[in-house]
Image (cartoon, rainbow, N blue to C red):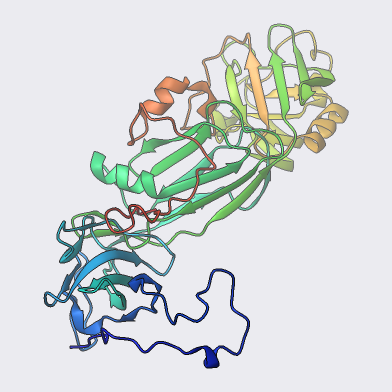
Length: 424
């Protein structure tokens, strides 16, 4: 067992060759305060329940750090993984034992820093490194969209490799998915299904916002023998707030940038039986050329409604094939009548202008159409058509707690370092 000598030799004045630092004692020797001494090696006073000889710890079992005798007590414990995440733990009132209060992560190395105090109040230190066993049953996460600049209507997505149905397991997954934006906004994740989550702000993203999305799920126990897997973080930025509002009854599209009107375009939308969907949509992609066939939306070949057309400057807003595109064959009806099969048609020049003006994530809204409202999730990004209260109900976390981006990193302060360690 290692002990620090209880009597330390005082330094005489002759050995002080350098100027004294402010606040240092002059000729009286070292301070009588035990805390002013360099920490001693507390290796002989501390033990842990981790396996020896290179074996790895079971992540399902709590980690325990204890004193080996009566010569010292534990004053502080810090346990972090390689990413700097803290793991929660609790220190016994008598300072004899500290133990984790949440499961350890699988396949992770923990650095455990233990601070002690001996009978005379002198501080000791011991650093332990503990590896946990890995597990092959992982839930990987694909975050989206890809890095880049998007419109202010672009939701963030998380696709899981395995379904998660249990509410408690969902809370663990969702709690580990972090969205940070500058400026800060109110926002929330919503479980679309057991393998898909979307994140959106209460309102649209601010213009020129920086958004970082990451997962802290790797190694964390989700449920049973299922643990979190890897995820590649993404960095996004928003551009100007570009909105295109089509009034199907007035046969016009009004385009604004940051609230100022920049163009009004005569259009045609879906005719009766093929009415364009109402509601807010988000630009999904842009195709300079696409061949459109009636069969793709269920119109049989040879029908009076059948068509097979080369289409230019096509901006996609649903996965089922609704576009804003050039329709030179219907210029006579644009601004006056609705004659399309659901798309928003305009002249070639206007379609090219629109194609060049908008980006993925910009907002395309249709009002006063006879069509149904765009569904939130099954045909593109109709997320904004769901009221905020209903959106929040789709979160697995506390519905009454405000959810914001740009949250501060949780780091323990000295006042609660040994008692409670937040896990990111």
